[in-house]
Image (cartoon, rainbow, N blue to C red; front, side, top):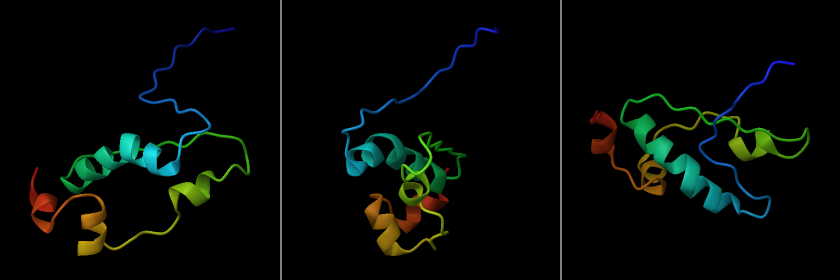
Length: 80
């Protein structure tokens, strides 16, 4: 067997809320994405555990409401 090491930015407990997980792990990436940086969120888990539902599968248009939900403004999008 080949030994491999993997690095994770976050590993969450099964009891963490989706809101807490989003605020800790994803919100900063969304902010950077809207500033022009690349971002990736990988959801790993058992089949049928809700990964697709949680991550969403539809593209959302960038609106003032969406930006406000991420504590951003239209001006933040053009920065970077």
